[in-house]
Image 1: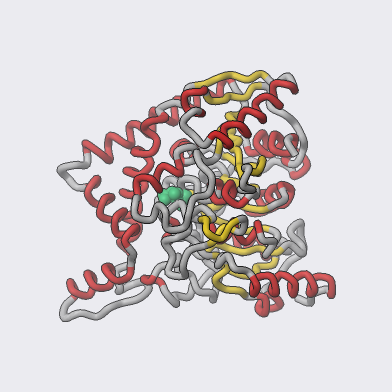
Image 2: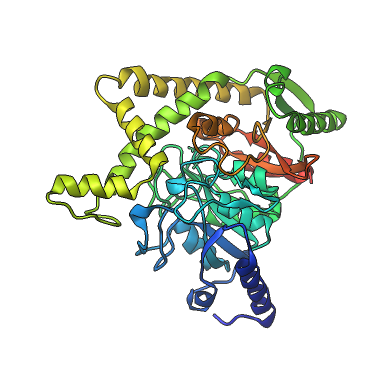
Length: 445
Ligand code: GLN
């Protein structure tokens, strides 16, 4: 494709900003390759995209920020990447993240930690921290991340941008490296809500290459981008709010009051199974991850360390290829699936997931949306949590439920703390009600 001179200027300026950026958010660029892409004409024309390093782009490295896939080159593109290019989007590079999208801080990466553009001593959130920080620094218009338990919404909150997770199955996962397959979704980040809606409009839909993608009639673009407030919104009670950062609580209450002033019916709810969502999420995702990651054996994919026999090859390849957090999850996942413990952990967690799904299904019979904080705390210090996995896991306490249930949610940038750090709030709607979510978010702008 030939680039117009204004487009050339825009890309040159983004390229310069990437080279000057200190956040370590972009790990590879491909500005010089854009003219070889078969870029179509569509609603994404002239929009630039950065893609998380766990989503495949043909002939580009796909490492998931892990040693085991270092230098691995993808032979094909994810469906979302193809659709973006067909509709005019320009793929300018790839972003840093937690290894195999496991983490809440983007510190577990062979490329080093992502730094928060608002304060370089702090994390950008994770696992799609590179995709979020890059948008905050205007390195591209839009970025893609993956959200298995909050990895798009939580870094979006930490970096002051919009971050959207779709209903499970609405966006094809073909070409997204699997973490926990029944939770994984591809999410979209931007400073502009309209750009998120346009991208969702383009990349959603049934894909024969992903059997879990859903054939759901797509809304038309105008309906998705209307402004319309919901009638009834569920909000949480003080006991939970008192346990979170008080500046986030204040932001939350200010939006609740704004909605009340607009005559929206506000219903206080008990978040179903709130105490159980973190253990349920981690038992199930670690089990799925231990199975998904068994493919990295040094034979079929990625790097190999040869040993004196096959067993030594497997052990050395996987011991040196994965870092501690990934190994912790593979081992815990294998444990909860092992014959002696399957009933006590995995099978029990599946039952709890079913109960959580049913409770939210019932809740949405009487309300259109639920409003939650996205995170219980402000961005934390780089290095501060790395050694305390349980603390890290609790960063996701408000986000994992949408992945357990499968419904869509979005982080909206809502305010700044007194130290100038971003605060995000989360809108949640029933499955396949992306329209409700976008209309709600639009009317808060
Ligand atoms: N922080 C969560 C985890 O580590 C979420 C990960 C994700 O959404 N990819 O599992």
